[in-house]
Image 1 (cartoon, helix red, strand yellow):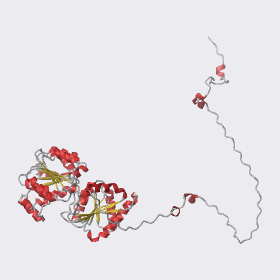
Image 2 (tube, helix red, strand yellow; image 1 turned 180 degrees about the vertical axis):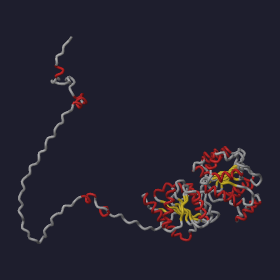
Image 3 (tube, rainbow, N blue to C red; image 1 turned 60 degrees about the vertical axis):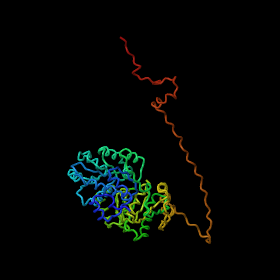
Image 4 (cartoon, rainbow, N blue to C red; image 1 turned 90 degrees about the vertical axis):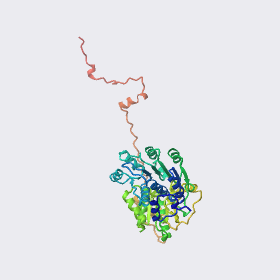
Length: 478
């Protein structure tokens, strides 16, 4: 079996690896690191949680051990789709480069430009950034990419989903043609394959597992719920989730719960907190400092349940995550693999439980088609049946009854009482009132003028027989 000591890494890097507690590389590390140290481009295709970050961080530190950084001209560039993933790469760099003098800078949104400008002005060996913030610094004239020796694109399929591919192509054009490129992705969409054919030169293709497969150390389970109405489905899923958490009990050390929408993340976090469960949200609309504090608490074990959108599906690396819950089935089947890949990492066992309502059937079919197997069905928890709705007459009075004045009726005589019949005097017939015939309105002159088509065109329209007196006066002719 290959050991890290067999990979010709820098002794300082090997010392940091040993202090981190690792001795045996993962399959993608064992195959990618030798090609990277030879200077070849690397195209890595592997599922999440297989150690892709270390597979490019370790040879990157080894190669940059010789040389010195210059101001505003980083020697290497690592692109990540999300802030969390970029921060994760920065943490790996700090772990493995702590015995070297290499410097780094992290360029992500939500942080002031001033502090980042100071780091770039000093000169950095490794620049870790999201595409948008990197281009912001470049357009401000604070950054030059002509000195990049090694370029890394991590989670390229996620870049495609987030619309970063045009930015990636532009950044490739700003870097030297002689650079070494590491390109990593969990899946190979046609658009990603086009980019690799354009910007990578004879890459070493390393495919560890079949594209978009889940780790065998993850026990998957699907819970089908009968809710058919949209307004009741969310509540039923929240009730089922709390029941499952209670049933799992102490087996849940910590868990990540994924929702499709940010608003659902906030609603679910508040609902779990209402029932005294230790939960906190994280999604893209939250302030970066709040997201960072939440992740730190989760990694430190101070937070048990992390409610997240897909912003955390790729960038969260906590080896001890015991459970992953899919509160919503993802609309993209690849996201299912990335979500459940938060558990079962580094050879540990994990459990992924997904909730489904009938409206999610199309998403389930796509996921099972991608995995090429059916998800194991679990038993739905017993939930309190909702109270049957009362009859409409009992819930609210009829509108006609509420506004109609009821006339009191005389009570009927008892059956055994003897009552003399009263002769009724016939009432004289009332003559029906005669309705006046409707008066016909005489048409006005203007109406006659408007309806000239209906009049006889041979008749003369004028003053009639009456002629004004001033027209009948005699006048003299000179």
